[in-house]
Length: 266
Image 1 (cartoon, rainbow, N blue to C red):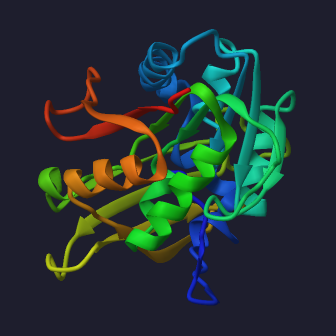
Image 2 (spheres, helix red, strand yellow):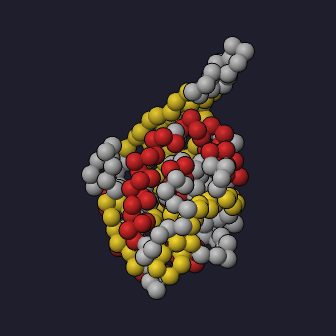
């Protein structure tokens, strides 16, 4: 997952993954692993847009893994995120892209784009008001006839608790006999209260430094969960023509995830 921490009722939710651990991001998710899904997202955006996509805005770009593939297909990518550390990671991966620090609920660049892409950073919208504001940002930056795509991890109808794991080591061993840095993680998603609009993602990280020492970090993320009908209703209220589309990938269980492909009418 690649969203940035967002302010919540005037307080900053400091998720360590996007703060003091941001430099470890390349060992959590490798850009090469995003090639297939970035292609799916690009096809949906191209199909919803009434012309070629020559400029695309991504809200909540995280470490820039999707952008590393989309920039090869579309003319100009502008990337935004609320985490300075994640923007630093993305700049290293995508130096040719324009980057902006900003909250997807309030960002205003005073220009429009052929397409707006919002990956799983939208999961950090935990209230309908948050979600509507993010949608309004996308609508404001999408030209008439342009496309937008929202890809939450879950909607209420397909959420199931579970755990995943992963991580890797640095590909290039450092000089001087040091160990390559390494990261392993366990992600556990669960919903303590199905009556509200939140679920939890608990992370446990094992981090190996170059001197061979290993430390453990725990990080709890609060994420938003809304029914499909509310997604579609809010998108319509903002002004989008929207539809739900299943996410079909070779390594994803059918029916497990879905996206919202949108068009701003002329």
